[in-house]
Image (tube, rainbow, N blue to C red):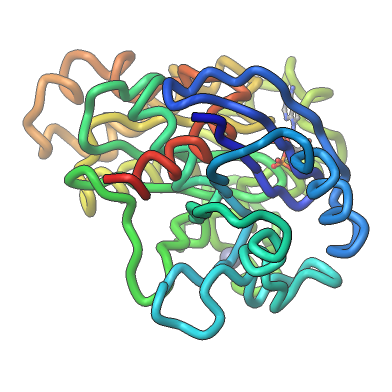
Length: 290
Ligand code: ADP
Ligand code: ZN
């Protein structure tokens, strides 16, 4: 089966062709400008590829309720031009094929569970720490939806004792994303993340916020694996710091060897690297079939 996959992001749309084993044979990156321009390029890429289905993991918020009149829309995004855009509808206009649709992070969680770091598990979390913070969840074999979909990047966190940064989430000011996404690091310290590599206080503070969030996710959802990726996690020293702090916060309460003894296999980098999103989009097509 020839599957078209789209990872629709706020800065770029990555499009690819794949098969049901998650193998991606061709990929392009298209800048996210206006829906008209970007979608014209997306449609042109897939036009002669003879795709039999499409999978789309999108930035959000998105409408995932199949009974809703705005199913498949990007809804209230602050991103100019894209609010209330009918993404699935636009694709359906050009391609008469089934379309699987979910958030970018839910798709990535699914991809990791099919072919990556959570392979074979019926539960995992996929967290990306980049321009924003997003978290997708697979629980009991299903991607978690609800009234809309979880927004675990915007949970409230306790401030670090040495942190005077106000926070920069336009909705909640000092939520997790407002305190710990890439732009927050840059605003707090006056330099971009990659220029702060040699400043341990930056990563100790970053780990303080990420670990609180992950500890909360563990308490609420009890995922079998926590996968953390995104640009900020290129600072590999964050992984051991975060693991140590999660363990400390949980305080021995969650009695499982993964947490008590094998934390380095529990909180991990994406197994699929930069392909998690596209592979996940392919995975969304697989779930359509089951
Ligand atoms: P996006 O979230 O837009 O898809 P990324 O996941 O690449 O993109 O995240 C971009 C963010 O990650 C930026 O805020 C950038 O400063 C930060 N970032 C990128 N590379 C590094 C690095 N090596 N160290 C720390 N932060 C980084
Ligand atoms: Zn927020």
